[in-house]
Amino acid sequence: MVSPGSETKIDSSLAIATDALCKVYSGPFGRRKVTALNGLSIQVQQGEIYGLLGPNGAGKTTLLKLLLGIVSPTSGSASLFGKSVSLASARWGVGFLPENHRFPPFLTAMQTLVVYGRLAGLEKMTIHEKAPSLLDQVGLRQWSDARLKEFSKGMMQRLGIAQALMNNPALLFLDEPTDGVDPIGRRQIRDLLVSLKDTGMTIFLNSHLLSEVELVCTRVGILHRGKLVKTGSVDDLTRASGRYQIQIAENQKSELTELFPDLHFANRSDETWIQFEAADASELNLQIDRLRNSGIQILSIVPQVQTLESRFMEIIGDIDDSPGGIPRFEKRTEDVESTDKHSGS
Image (cartoon, rainbow, N blue to C red; front, side):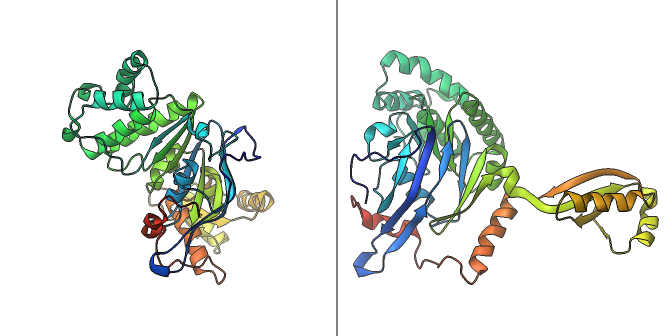
């Protein structure tokens, strides 16, 4: 277990760093312990949007709680900008939107930001200068004096993002930021996150909406049963290695079929495409030369990609189906977190 106040020896240029981080929760009534995080090591660079993906019970919420100092690790270490998460000062430059946040319904949107601004230690003048601008950023300016009891779920999410930005954080944690938000609102939130990244802010988000993550994140990590099973840029993860489609002239389809009966046509009704696999650039060029030397006119060559959602399901499925896959837990992490009250184990 990490001793309180100890400094981690991790690169201070990293916004977030964990080293062999483990968290074990004790089961109730003598039941077996549950490992929520198992030797997790991640690095998040300053100024990037990092998306953490994983099914329910993967350990995403536990990781957030550890990084925010809400619970203590069983072993391993974690730091924010080079400071151990056991130090309160590590969180001075952090903003946070929890998944199930609750604001007093009798407050207005403006009053809510005032309250959270004061909690963040901001001066009254600073709060009243900043709050209207933030409400405008999240599309709630016209609702600034409305009581929160009148707000929809999506409006509450937008207000939650505004409160997380009140202290002008260098690092922003967002847990399901677009949950319950309509398509227009999701687009506005995506644009806001990109604009915040452009200012140098680091954003760490959990989300089940993989299509949203795919559009906004610089890099993603896939967490499964407490382990980081894959990490990389969205492009790296979604690129279908070695798969290509080639568009040829429509009037050469019958000719192509006669010359190369082994080729497969892609399922496109309006144009003529063939699809094939090539292990490397040399094999790709051989395929191209093969077609051109036979007089086939090539109109375009497109590397094939998967959606992040299909790639995610493929990775998780490969682990679950493998003989040496990660053992399944009998209970989800969230089911036992309540038994770890104020425990450092």
